[in-house]
Image (cartoon, rainbow, N blue to C red; front, top):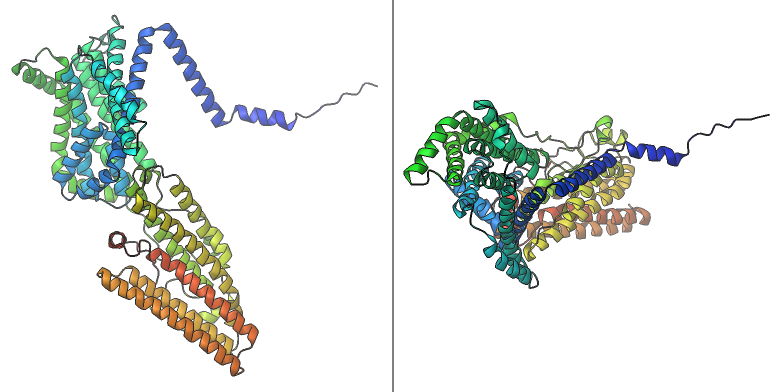
Length: 629
């Protein structure tokens, strides 16, 4: 008899079929398809290959230029940014100068967003920096326009290329200078290749694809926006536009429209990156950037006929009426200056409007709720935004704020461990009226609180610090190491509090007259009072000498209690009030209490002995290191 056996597909086949619809697999397929299309296009058109190669050299040169300058500046760029925004005029000048040096308004914008997210500069000051960055972005197009279409950059680029490579074999500073020179060389070589690529398209004539009037202008505004979003560089877009204009592939009106679109594309690129990887304050600045650039672009678009006439008349007056490159550079400068003039009187109002549109999340008085359904919500880091990794100072600010957050969480966990109210601002009592009730309710296990509220934040903090690739000097390395130690000690403090909780729960339920219960109440009172003293010291706005004197008094108080409590325990043994096993538990728990306090105290002492570090901590005083008491 014939038997038919129907077999189910093997798990391997099912896994393979799932891979076919896996998003990551689809992404790789699209990348391979794009590469294949590019390879075919290079084979089909040698001019297109030269154009793309020039663009690649230009973008890679900009990356090397940025990295070389950042390595040379070290932390000075960040210091200049944090000290040059005291007034709107200073912020405008800094944004202009920084973009002129770095030749990247996007980089300056992202640095500003990172600093604002870290709380190092104000929103109004950062808006002025963005205005300056837009003005500074016009410098690059002026240099290229003045160089002219017929001047070859390779004669300058070749020596710079040689010196840049040779300096790469020297020390750190030499490597930074070499990368800077290499970046300039590649930019110049890229410009020449882009010119040659466009010159090979003798019959391209992009004006054939343009519609009439405003529709045609709007089309090329969209082209400029799209190119800038794809290339992530308005400088590259304007370089392509200059080359196409100089080779006769574009009409002047089309080039002016593309310049308007490059501003829109720059705002979109920076805005998306700022919104995704920043805190709420950084998101405000990203929105401000989009509002400013897009509004400026709209004004320039509707005023395009008038501004074109003004550009033509101005260049004709100085004898450059036939120089389309200068006309494009002048137009780009004029409409950016127009945007700054329109927005300059409204900086304060714009900042207030952004704060209304994007308000800060209200910090709850209690981070760890007592409701069972809320306790199981996993807590993650609040301040470790990817944008903060742009600079050392912004990363340091994010780490400091996250340690504050972690310290506050740890403090509330410790409060649960000793069956105290989470909010201890009012007063500290040896035995508050609700203590018995909290003990009978079987307060939540501290180990569960650690896994839910501490472990995730600690993991995020380690991952963030491990992702830092910016070079660190000696002081910055010390801060990084101290932060890691402080975070570890906070975790250790919570674990010690868990050990302490078991005996607290056992002995605090004993009869009122029990000597062991009385001793645990004293230990509990000491912990609460000391933590409150630590908090007071963390927000004290006093001189360095007074602060150190307060710290010394705190340490002496802790040492005094330790000695007196041990003396009390041995006296209780001699008096027959406590047995050896109970005293051993109390001695162990005294050690756990001390290490718990030391762990929380370590966050306060981050940067101990450094006035700058403590003043920075006080600057962030809206969210002090240890809150809740």
